Length: 94
Image 1 (spheres, rainbow, N blue to C red):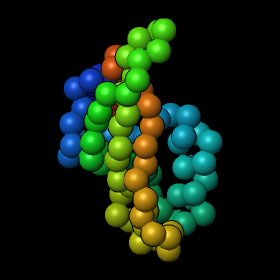
Image 2 (image 1 turned 120 degrees about the horizontal axis):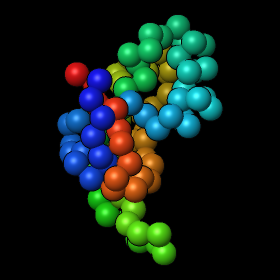
Image 3 (image 1 turned 60 degrees about the vertical axis):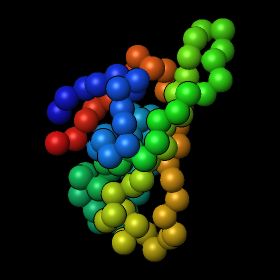
């Protein structure tokens, strides 16, 4: 898998979620739902500039979970949003 900076992400890119989210709850959820690790990927829908702070720029990334995530979960899909520094590396899928 290729890693790219957050600044180069665009709508339609498939990425792995932030490592912290995967560790905290996503791996547990896929095990409970009986899903494969491939259900963890996100499809980017929007990347926009957020308010900068004293350390520099932030981006807000909005993405959708994999379709199989929602089929098994029974909940209504909602966007996955997170902040990232432009230079943060993201793991691309495919």
